[in-house]
Image (cartoon, rainbow, N blue to C red; front, top):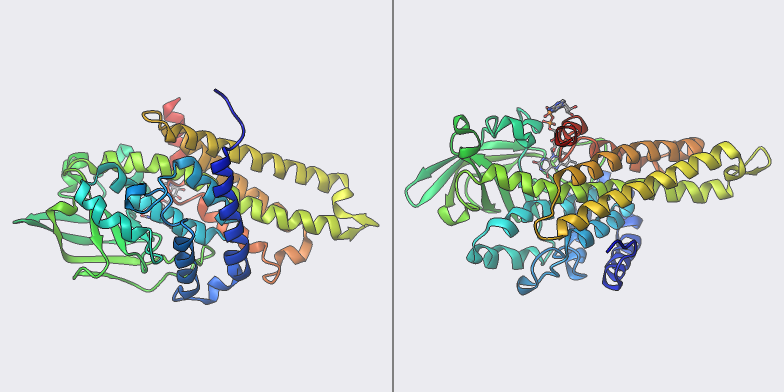
Length: 387
Ligand SMILES: Cc1cc2nc3c(=O)[nH]c(=O)nc-3n(C[C@H](O)[C@H](O)[C@H](O)COP(=O)(O)OP(=O)(O)OC[C@H]3O[C@@H](n4cnc5c(N)ncnc54)[C@H](O)[C@@H]3O)c2cc1C
């Protein structure tokens, strides 16, 4: 049946996330840039765990809420209204957990899921490498560009390679690593392995200074002869490419939600301002040209939300997860986020451009939404090919 309302339970989760963003995130949202070690964000992740946000998708038997892609996406929109970087870090933690949900043996789930609901512990999806991220996500490249190598060594594996850019690079509790036993084997050599923080040979560089998303810690990650027990392999060698593509379906819907939240955050500030700011003798929103800009912004935000909700709803039904719809949600919402955040600044004049007012941060956060989890050129190709 077609329905356009959220259930009571979904509304309650949305309210919880909205209040969390208002109370815990918004008051410090412009301070992450100065907080190079990520201490402020760490505090927020701990509080997110305490109220049950961090463990949302994790099965109930391991201390989570077993929330579907719909509830998780709704929460990501609310968090992104507070700060895109916090939403990205939490969304990326779920990104790293998705293949564990899909392919880990029971002992692995028992071992890794409970800690990921507690203490602000985050997961990291370590996929992108210095020579390129898009080609690892691109199904046509068949895993041939992966240079992180997993080599069998008796009862264990040995992992060597370098990643760059993953969310939660420096502060993750657990790393889900995209690797290959041999790039020449293509997808048949692809694999995903789990490496916990503290494993000898695992290290990372300094957090990279970026245009935005400062609450998210991105850096190089080094795997130098890291010993990985055989049981830390998700599924079997050759499953990596399939698992990664299936994981992208769920997390692209989430990215659509984050982009929607970034657009909404800027829109809400600009709308309030335009009702109060008097230009040419009346509030600026009463000028037709400004009013039409707000009409377009509101319409596009609604459309972006409907797209991610539809994708997430299908993803939540067994056997109906849909790459095209999730990818459409990500591409459309990220373009909307860029347009809306730019127009929000425009209607606020120089106040919009000021660092102190805080609306320009949304524009800086929006840009990467067109690039991460599939650059929009690659993802448009994915949508086009499915047609
Ligand atoms: C804040 C942030 C969070 C991130 N989180 C993660 C994470 O959690 N895990 C992770 O592994 N990585 C993460 N990344 C990395 C991000 O996913 C990659 O940077 C992205 O996939 C693009 O890879 P690249 O930078 O190597 O660009 P490249 O792959 O070199 O691509 C450069 C450009 O080439 C074009 N292009 C690429 N492929 C095609 C194609 N097939 N057709 C046409 N044009 C194309 C696009 O315009 C693209 O932007 C994150 C990055 C940032 C900044």
